[in-house]
Image (tube, rainbow, N blue to C red; front, side, top):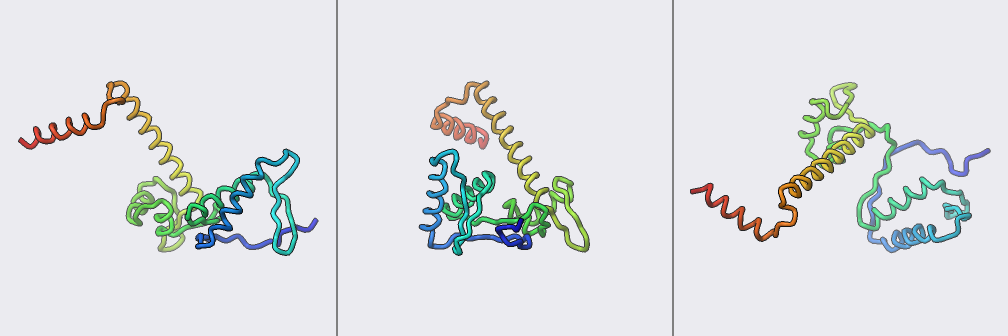
Length: 174
């Protein structure tokens, strides 16, 4: 059976929203409205030439997220997970400096390859590191909330806290 979509080489591409966001908003609305249709109807993608293919549910969800991001004015990058990134590209993805990223690589926090003089980082390793960091941050926040509740500080008036901090800082200077 012939594929309805021509085979194209995998590549990474960044899509930046332009001023024509009305089309994106219309597309996002159409995608969201699809959820209100009957259970028998399946999402379809139709090209300008009239060819149409049925979209699997996971692909539909990806398109919904892409449309929402572009509607919000965010750039969207489509890249295969096996993609190797330069240290600068990896740093940009994590929103850290290149120096910080190199330190993370050298301490073993993120695996990397060094086929020549330059380090390369696999996208899936980078995404796994980001997932671990977010999980650790969520745990730390939960611990802080538990500590403030245990100490009876959770419902403290912010103005009272500011006043107490100013007094403590003043006492420390004298």
